[in-house]
Amino acid sequence: MYEDKTLKCRDCGAEFVFTAGEQEFYAEKGFENEPQRCKACRYARKSEARGERQLFKATCAECGCEAKVPFQPKQERPVYCSECFSKVRETG
Image (cartoon, rainbow, N blue to C red):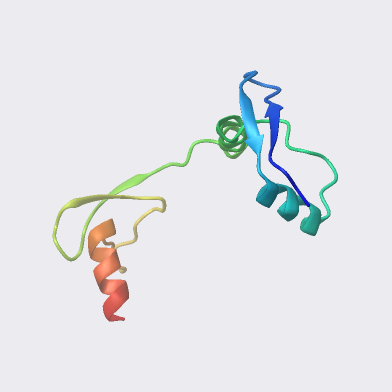
């Protein structure tokens, strides 16, 4: 029923494909308008609206390496680097 469409980004002018699957998703959600921006411009626009995420430095409680986390670490709670966090999460 749906076929891929080539659209032009209103911000950068690049052509992008509005796939049949994306069209079906839009229809299911009740969206009436086609996307006006390519994925890169949509992402940039969302990031701009959100602002830059502040990262805080912390020392991993497991391996002792420096970790950057999106929250202000507190002394009473352990902070893990990404790798150790995955391991701790798996073991419960």
